[in-house]
Picture (tube, rainbow, N blue to C red):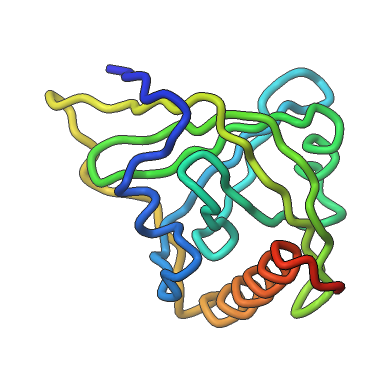
Length: 162
């Protein structure tokens, strides 16, 4: 059953997407954009690629040459699917390009200004497992990218030049 939560993500999701949460969980997050054909386009992200600024503003990074970036620049809308312990959260809203990172690998950082949050789950059929990635393979690279994104967001917030 789907429940409307307004325009703020849950405390459970916020807790693992906060910038100060340095040790990220290895969950798979799903970013949906509108493709050039009008169909949804799926982009898999990790919590190392997503950080909350507030309960209604999230930042995320994508590859600068990706179809996802082209879709974001064109439609300027997205939905981020975030797993909770027994349900899924759908955070939808307008997107805006913030900054391009060069190091440690090229990434384009966007903000998602959340206008709608839905929780999808059922007490009769709770979700009892979540998609995860193998952190032993990519975790260190993700951590370096996460640290670079945090530094760039902090310098952007304080008005420092890149």
